[in-house]
Length: 75
Image (cartoon, rainbow, N blue to C red; front, side, top):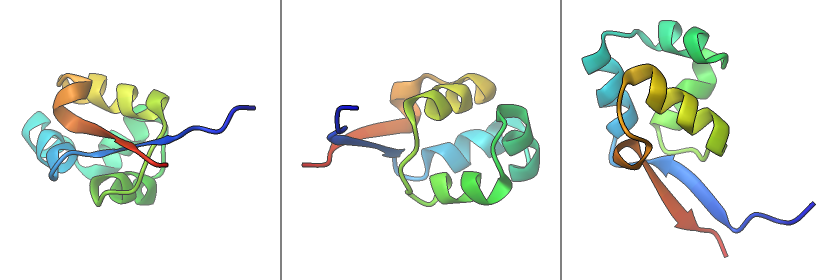
């Protein structure tokens, strides 16, 4: 399997703000996209996530992926 050389992280607290504006608690959003609440908290606090999870999250809160996440070069 090829090594990935990027990280997908929340852009300046954008995920947390979008969740609140969309009316979700962290537990509700985590359940809606199939991850744990601690995992969502980690994403909101800047931990990297997968492309799949990032797109599910963006879709659930009704915002574009590009508005919520930054793709960083990890080399």
